[in-house]
Length: 251
Image (tube, rainbow, N blue to C red; front, side, top):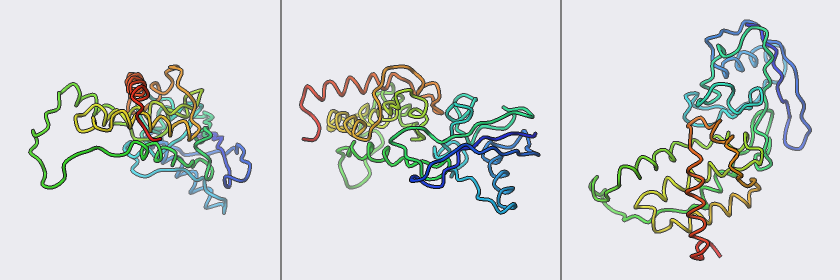
């Protein structure tokens, strides 16, 4: 395939960026989207040009680093996959593909398509810990967990912190991420001691970082590669309300 690529190029956070056009020929329909970018970078290096910086690691849809807006959609046109799992068979010869970084104030651009997502780390850190006994490993059935709670917790824990929810949300909200990271602990018996403190503190940190408020538009759920449900935001809001009434959280 022969493709026209429009890619955001920005040297660093302090300099202005711009869209730059490239023409790339010989792209296999069986290659992944990141392999296509590898091919482009090989051509740029061969021509003594600066390669395009983009995040990647596992390339298996696990780590969540391959954060790209592709033709205006987080992770591209296919549903429930990350950018590294997107294959070029979803495009056709002659297509123009627009590639941008996540666009959100709490995700400042580091270079080209790479953004700083440490705001997510600080939200998780605000959630604290869970109170469990230390020492020898307990028996597997020492703390019974109802299956429905275990299943819900695992659904929330599937979040890979990619940031697609923020990039897709018109408000730049990270409530789907925050809810997933809070609820995978709050739903379990081990997470009950800090449940309401966790909800209040994580939502507070979410707001401190500059993420927008959730208005239930649903774009976050639509682009989430792990298909995490909006229901988790409702559950977090419930814990947040109870926590605020109890006076939970840091003072």
